Each structure stands twice: as C-alpha cells, then as structure tokens.
Length: 180
Image 1 (cartoon, rainbow, N blue to C red):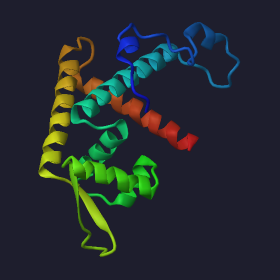
Image 2 (tube, one colour):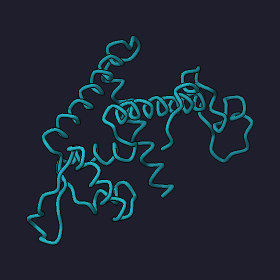
Image 3 (cartoon, rainbow, N blue to C red):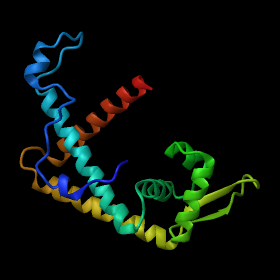
C-alpha cells in the first residue's frame, strides 16, 4: 500500500474514472447488463475503501508501524497465535521478509515468539500483553466509528445495514474466487 498524501487526500473525492458511469454503462456492449445504480454503488464502495485505508494508515502511524507491519500485527492479534508460515502466506511475503517483520514487531513489544508445542522445529507468534492492549485499542475505536455510522443512519435499520454489508462482502468474495 502506498502512503497517502494528506494534502491531496483532504480534497473532495475525485470521480472514479476507471469505473463506468451510469450513462456509459447503458451504452456499453457488454454481455453482462449493468444494474441501475451499479456505477454509483461501485464509486461509493471505492470511496469506502479509500477512507478505510486512510483510517488504517492512521492506526499504523499511531502505533509507529508501516502498513505491512500493521497488517501483520493485526493478523497476529486476531488469530491470537499463528506461525510464521501462516503469517507469510497471509501477507504474501517471503519467509525472510516475514522473519524480519516479526523481529521488528518484537522489538516494539507487540508480539513475541514462543516454542510450538506441536513442532519443536517451529515457533508460534502471539501478541504480548502490550500488543493485546494496542490491538484492543484499535478494535474499540473501530467499533465506536461503526456505532456512530449505525446510530446516525436514518434510512436503514442496524440489521439492514449489516445485511447490506454482508451481502456485498459475499459478492466480493465470490468475485475474488472467480478471478483467482
């Protein structure tokens, strides 16, 4: 992930040029018919993704981490215990790059290595007490942000919001599987 420029990102969001607009979508000669509102929904999802990346950048900056270190740390915190191999596969890093990242996270007391009771040649990585506190801080802020979004929405109920996001997530997961 590239770092975001606060000067350029503070402006109004630019239109999503790569995605078709409603007028263009209706004249496009695609085999797949574009649903009404799809281009606007795609642009809204893109903006959501952009804002979420900026939030993650803020979390990473607050913790003194790079994006990749933040991703690794949060994966470890969410899993509670993982192996370097699982972490490398999740991040799509080499084992050497993963080892260096674990070293950096250990140096700032967010994770530590412990012997793997199931494989004496392997170690497990888990959050330290300090790391668990930092992960809880991130999650609590994220839940407060979500609470603000749910409580301030005046059209959909909390359950409808959940269903909408869950449906979109499942649709994205299906598309991702097809692409892979």
